[in-house]
Image 1 (cartoon, one colour):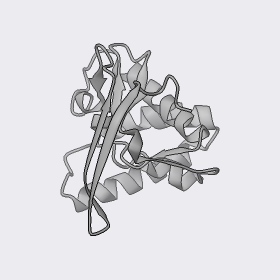
Image 2 (image 1 turned 30 degrees about the vertical axis):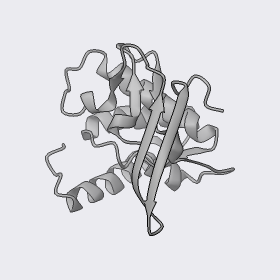
Image 3 (image 1 turned 45 degrees about the horizontal axis):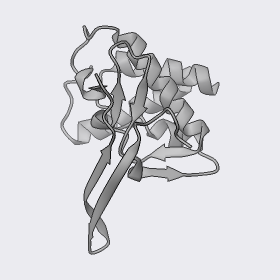
Image 4 (image 1 turned 90 degrees about the vertical axis):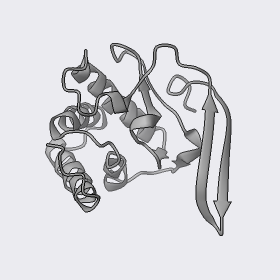
Length: 159
């Protein structure tokens, strides 16, 4: 179902202790020249940054259209090439499949993307252009929930 959205998966392993996930490993084919979303964090001069952020927003929209909710959509699990023309997601063992994803559940998927407000706004704009959600409502939701979480974690330097 995720053809073109992920490098070919090879294997995964999840280790549970007393019913709770303790460790998770995921292996996939190499994505040559890949960068991770983490490289965009704190780097507003990253080449083609806005184009890459837009591509990431559209990729997340495509995942959601397919009914995929990535429970670990974080900086290390989003890959892209140099200009953002290819964006992929890894750690597929953390994807949950649903027939319907509500707006709030879909927008909640942005909360682990630890990046500045301007970058989130660029991603949400591309996302809502694709999903036809209200940009203003989605952005407010994403910023409110994301910032609340990071304030609780004392990560407040992101503006």
